[in-house]
Length: 458
Ligand code: AMP
Ligand code: ZN
Image 1 (cartoon, rainbow, N blue to C red):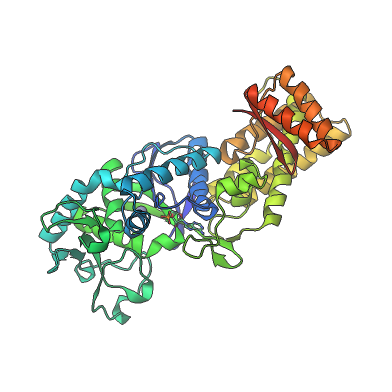
Image 2: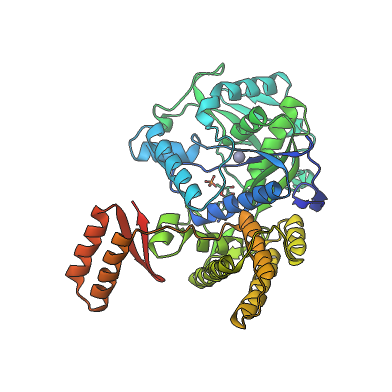
């Protein structure tokens, strides 16, 4: 079956045609590790996870690289504000990022290269760009990319270069489309950088953010690879500048398909660290939402539509996750050995193959579950129908990952849980607390959630 994705570069859906047959190479811009990533960031990371899971399900091998941005304006600012070493800040937030990725059942990348481990390669690409006449050194020892030297500059973001007065250069990593200028490849050391710098042929300094992804993507995939992803805010300037750097330095086509996910909004504004309107994964887990409910909420819209964060959405997600797990259990009791699938499965795969239409695929699955549930309640579901249903859920779960892992709680713990529930009902708080401590001493942790309690091994 053909798979097609919307390519931001051509503004069209295009058939996937991997460079190496049977294998898809993907680069996704990773987190800037100066703060805990928020659920908005994870909208993008889950969209990339769905992309990868769909490719794997239809039989491709996937080679996925995600960078860790551990040097840029924001990480330096944070380290200096907190009077800490850069590494101390970036290691902490990298570990938290990996922890949240695991919690959300996001499949790990094949490689997570960190920018600070690739400074020499960045210096080499900058040197090439100077030699080829695409970059120049300024008096302070910085190096800038000359956007006029690259004919295709502006193609990704659809910039009208003729109406732009390009008069100056920009040293900061982020700027807007109204302000296109020569951008920085290598930034000379400034007092506010403190002790963060590397030696280079142009004096001490550090790389610009855009250069990092040009170097790490081509080093770990190849000069030319299949898919590059990010959030829509990455289109300009980050990805526009990546194209200019990589294509000019390596004389390559660089990327075949550029895919960008829309933002997760909070009350009509982009969820972002700078606006301060963020929710993190631990906060939401603490509010009683399961990783599966968070996943469902984030995939309930197609990745190219804006999505608003709300508690109602999470509550709906919780119900949907409950339904799929409930039907799964019921079918599990009734099924037999077979790998047959219902006819709805083809439509399910078709919708995912059409630019990852997750709401349509979820609709097909949940309509099917409703039908099955009706038959179960009337006691009309045959064993072979139960088996097909079970297989459908199992296949769908390879994409959505909404089935909750079942934990087998030993009887000795179950008895204590029953006593604690009774104590809570009778408002005997001291007793219930001491029972919780006893459960903990035995290696289990009990948490109260909106759905009742959750008991997990420590
Ligand atoms: P950052 O950690 O800021 O470098 O962002 C990591 C990824 O999250 C990038 O691909 C961004 O485009 C993406 N991102 C940031 N904010 C949002 C948001 N509110 N919704 C969806 N994706 C986002
Ligand atoms: Zn990037």
